[in-house]
Image (cartoon, rainbow, N blue to C red; front, side, top):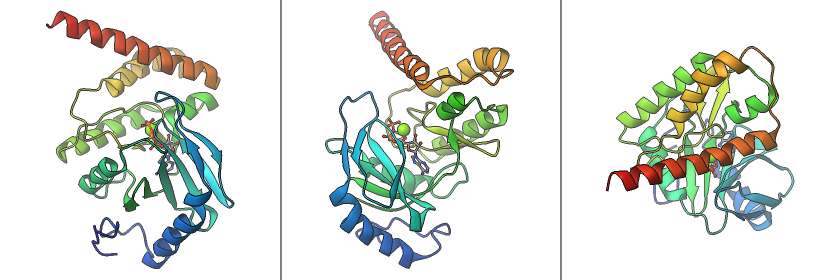
Length: 240
Ligand SMILES: Nc1ncnc2c1ncn2[C@@H]1O[C@H](COP(=O)(O)OP(=O)(O)OP(=O)(O)O)[C@@H](O)[C@H]1O
Ligand SMILES: [Mg+2]
């Protein structure tokens, strides 16, 4: 595949073996997915709600900006569709352009107004792992650290790296969401997650197959967001 930025193709890629498949998928996205997908961002700090998905598309996950789906005939690719009113697909495209090809990240094969076609990552998010009681080895955390260092060397600023944005696959760590990596303001999410991993998870939880229900995980997520906002405000006031 060649480098057609204007038409939305974003680069030479080994992983997308067949450019014809990609073209067919893009036609299907235009003709079947976009007109029949109903997706809404109700609250900015909670995942978008997908009201309707046309057959045979399957939803893989949702974030606060977008829904991620795949088509059963093209299951190695996913389509990340931003909800109406949620901006950011152009920035995400630029992040993928800078990242190039790296085993700990997805790749972007095509992008246009509000959607991106990405390489599918087959891992499970750390958030879902906690729900299923799966053991999260140290190696996963170390791999993600290395991946984030790589991103920084590429002129990016790892941002919003939380439990729903990182995955593990066969004991290795991968980063599933890089959409905020152009933002320059500091973000402590990954540092805080690592503290929780080393100080709480490893000594207390890693010995049991503890399955945390989603309402508990969401409570932790909301409490963390409010705590971080409170602490950051105090630091700002003190430094004035
Ligand atoms: N390339 C991928 N392969 C497989 N699953 C994916 C992929 N990209 C995203 N997902 C799934 O979809 C979910 C939502 O995607 P993503 O985190 O990119 O959305 P977002 O709206 O940008 O999230 P955020 O709220 O963190 O900004 C992820 O948590 C993950 O479960
Ligand atoms: Mg996300």
